[in-house]
Image (cartoon, rainbow, N blue to C red; front, top):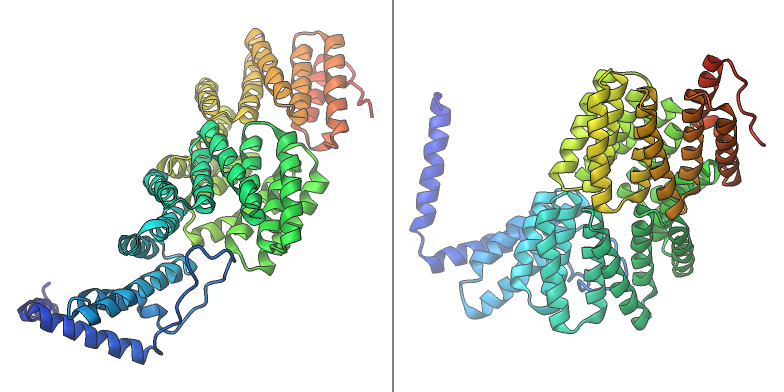
Length: 514
């Protein structure tokens, strides 16, 4: 504020505001109306009316020369609407049009704050089911940037409006939106209940597209709660529906989810094929969100199959896309995966910094399930850097989170990790308790991969206690299960651990029953 130029500009702004306030309301409205007409004409004229908010087709947003000025035009229309009743009605309609264009253009260019403001203001001008639809779009924007606590009441209001309007189809859509939010915040029981209600509605109406969306979300709930066989069955139904409808984007999403299921089960070749097909579709339909998600899932697959350099490149590409989109949840998840890469390559300082960034983001957006997974990564870092006691405390904290959100597969994985820590620390009784509980979990959810890995870890515990015959039997059972599901033991860390343990004990390595 020291230069003459700055001081002049400051006084000029005050002078401009004072001159503006001196205008009578009617004159001010007319001036805004004139500004609206001039800007609209110079920008290329009024755009066509958009399709209704409840359009069944997934229509791509088509840009218009007025879009860069849509927000400004909406503001001019707001003040101009007070000039005369006839002019006012025209300006209110124009404001609705430009708020909608501003919201959709901002979504398209990932300007989430602008989109949020425009959808919120548009919802205030609408009533009934249309208001509910505008609020739904607002809730989606809030969810994408991780503001789930703000999104929940918005989705709830949208659901109430659709029920009041008696629109069963849109009620089903609103139930699915809330169910997804519940799943992301760890309320899987509520998520499943809402999805079942939505599925019943769409089944009655015969809306196959919405049925496929709902089925895909329900498969995600089943996967998160360890019901892998049911999840795969539902995803097969989803893929069949979307292929029949010719919806390539939904097909890409369903294939990606199926690829994740196969990776979880250790079916790596088929997982890679499914994810590769999904990635190709994402690029074909130019959907960056799907592309970023698949890049991350491929990275996880490469990490699990020891292709570390490829995994890191995929995670870096995924991270760049999610940051471009402003998708905080996905950014937090990818950072957690990168921390795992740095752990594998013993870059401990980088691993801990990135892992803590991941946890901070996931806490910020109330994503309990993924916060638990990220904390599990930190526990591994703590153990590998000599903080065994802290690692055990962190794993126990993580175990509580997974039990709270109902993520049974992650619960089993943490129990196996605790068993390893206890075994290496000579706490054999605790290790056996943890591994037995893990086996119980994996058998209850029918996760063959988890059961096989747990049996192999149980074998390592037996070797540590000199029980070589028991070790051989547990290893034989675990390896047989993993082979049956197509899981390549070459990529299983337990294989290396068994060879090391047997060498240290001076006994032969158990033969693989293949």
